[in-house]
Image 1 (cartoon, rainbow, N blue to C red):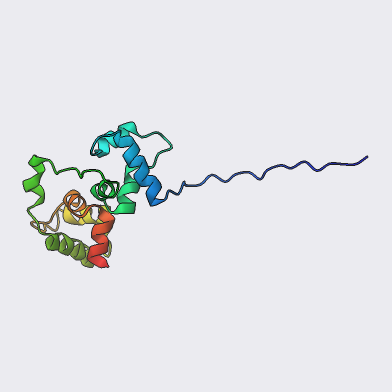
Image 2: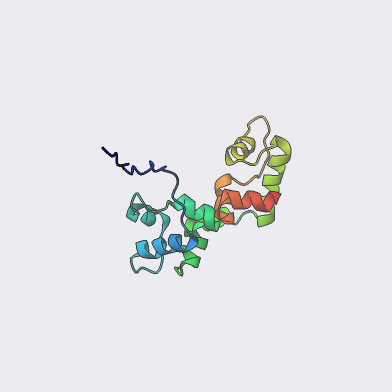
Length: 149
């Protein structure tokens, strides 16, 4: 009596899906559905569970508009009501604020920055909010790279 070995496939390890830049850009173009641009909110409404997330695009390409640009789509213009609010500070001032936070707290995380900026015991005067820095620089990680790199 001979025993036959039965092949049992090894269990698959589920891990994060790794997309190439081209795959990411292809998904953007596909979800734009022939339109000349794709807003982040529209992207989130159209994406399927298996599609990459908007934060992945922002981390990989340094910002949503940069991803749109690389995909050949039109960038999203800043809303009129925000234009004056976010042009109050120069890029140098945004970077200087991050550097000052690092000197005083030893950290450049977004949470540490906002806690430092809004500390009622130490009013800093005119320090830009993290949301302004993120918007102007494309992402928090890009801003901290420029400030500390």
